[in-house]
Amino acid sequence: MESKVFHHALTIRQDVCIGCSHCMRVCPTEALRVKNGKAELYENKCIDCGECFRVCPTNAIIIEQDDFSKIYNYNYRVALVPSILTGQFSDEITASAVTSILLKLGFNEVVEVETSVELLKEEINSYIANKSHSKPVISSFCPAIVRLIQVKFPSLVENLMLLKPPLDITSLYIKKKLQERGISDNEIGIFYITPCAAKIAAIKSPVGEEKSEVAGVINMNLIYNKVLKSLVHLSETEKGLSGRKDCLTDSGLIWSLTNGEASQVKGRSLAIDGVYNIVEFLEKLENEEISDIDFLELRACDESCAGGVLTTGNRFLTVERLHKRVEANKDRELKGFGNRILDYKDFLKSRIPIGEIKPRSMMKLDEDMAKAMKKMERSNRLMCFLPGIDCGSCGAPTCQALAEDIVQGKAAISHCIFLQKTMEQTHKLHPDHSFRIMEKIWGKDRFEKNCNKIDKSKRYH
Image (cartoon, rainbow, N blue to C red; front, side):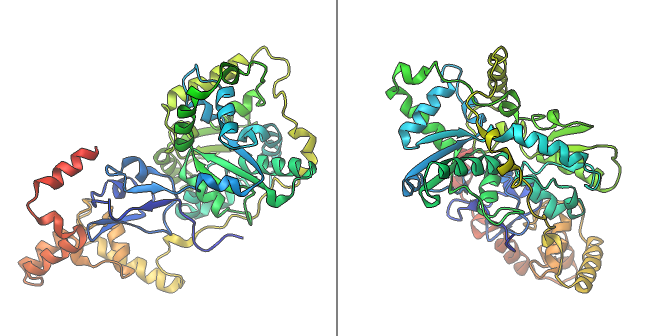
């Protein structure tokens, strides 16, 4: 079941990091600090939303992926692609051309993740109709949001929908179908092409499940570049493949976009995208300021998966292109042509539920409740002395974060630059000591006259 520590797809390259604090300021869970002139990740608080990756000016934050050559460890290789992959490319590059190139790159089959959406829709509506489930039911589609709720809103964990997302259901379908063709389990390699870091983390350490059926993860920007390079070698027939029909239904095509899921749910539902919008909304929900909602579709990225940190195309154009695909299928009689997943309905339905999702105690100040309460009281007292302007000069994103670090032994009150000055005035802190503290937080380089460090920062913007 769930491991005690989150797996993280985000890594900070200490040799490239300049300790600029951009990442620290945008993190929605205050999971970053600056120490010794470098960014440091508090792993228990990180939800892999990728906001730090977006703003890093030096590319010091990287997102791990499996080596592409890993696909050759398997005799039968399946590329599991989200519908938004094709939306990354301009209109003249068809979904068929992208599929042709993926097959040329070494995959035996290409399957779209949303193949299982029609099956899942029924299960979601049955789940919401069940009065024993806490309302509003919160979608478990976006793994960054699942982790956000586990870490920052533990009282709302019971609202998370305990159903697998399309990624996991489609993987089960693929594996079952191939096994029936006589291909053994260890010969099948399903590789997910991901638009975000959170899905990598969810595959490597699933929530509510023991393991994922996915053998590896490849970042979408890598595949995007490979497709562009391979286009020149593609024949006109391969680019067009005019006989190919869309395997996805209209619902499947737009499922990963904002309102793709909520629009299919009966009852009052809301779709919210953007992690900061979601934090604001969940705070109101936690405070019982919002009621009478049956379902919440919450996606960490703006425009949902179309705005994932590993996408290359403009998110608004991606949304437009997918809606064009829906429009192009409008008059087609057999929507979902070629999708045989409903033949496996009984097999898959019994496997769609997932196990209990538990709150993560990462925000607790101590495992011992009595000690945690004392630390909280001390933290509150410290706030009376801290300036309350969240300047970040101490290397923590807010005064509250510094107070919590202090009571956990990770920082000292003298890290606050305002209190340093007060302590110097009252001779409780020598100016030399005060200077050394700031050097320890921001690094010695920051206090040296060096015009190149400014040029270096600008160069990466």
